[in-house]
Each structure stands twice: as C-alpha cells, then as structure tokens.
Length: 148
View 1 (cartoon, rainbow, N blue to C red):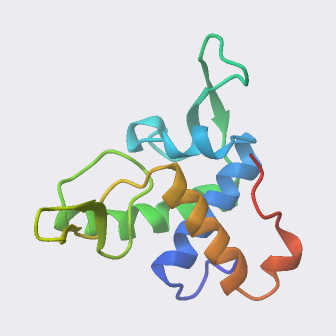
View 2: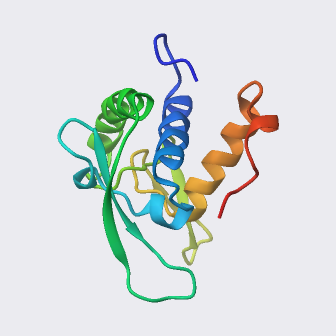
C-alpha cells in the first residue's frame, strides 16, 4: 500500500489492519478489541490482549509496530478523528466509514440509522478486510480470505 499520496479512508483503514496483523499476528477477535488507548504515545507499540483458542486466561502483551504500521496509524487516526466526532466519540480503534443500520426492525419495519464513526464489531472488521482484498489491485492474490 502506498502511504505517500492520497488514499481513501477505506484504503487507509485496510493498510492499518494489514500492518497490525503482520506486526502482531492477532486474529480478528483480538484486532477488533483494540482501542486508541492500546497504542503507545508515538504508535511504536500496541497492546494486544490474546484470546487463547479453547478458552483460558486472556493475557496481554505490548508488541512493537513497524514503520509501516506507525505511518498508517498516524493517517488512520486523523481519518478516524473526523468520523468519531460525527457520532459519539468511541475509543475503539476500528470505526465505520459510512452510515449503516443496526439491523433491528421497529414496529413500522424501519431500522435505526447509525452515523459513520460507530465502532466496528468483528463481522464488520472482517467484511472491510474482505471487501478491500477484492477492491484493491493485486491483493486478492496476495491475501488469504480470512486468517482466523
């Protein structure tokens, strides 16, 4: 991914997801739980709470981030800041880029519209990865459908 020029918010978010995945080997369940408070002041490290398969004790660790992750995080945090100002100001690292709905129908058959900047759940993060994998040139052949 090219960070020196303009990039869409979706491409910026995907770059950070990929960079942090490579740096931390975190699964989607661990990535989706990241908060801005899990980043060191200079983005040189990220705190990841490991979710052992089969249950067990959750353990956290600080993992150093690459130059790519640091640059991508700086760009993403600027994009993210504008998005969360429009919603409710979550500390979750991954937020939606577009308005969507909550999926629950009211008595009249309508859903509640949620603004951009709402926290992504695991399915939303995985979906954004899969869409980005298909959208951006060459990534379909390079990246797996889903790691874990």
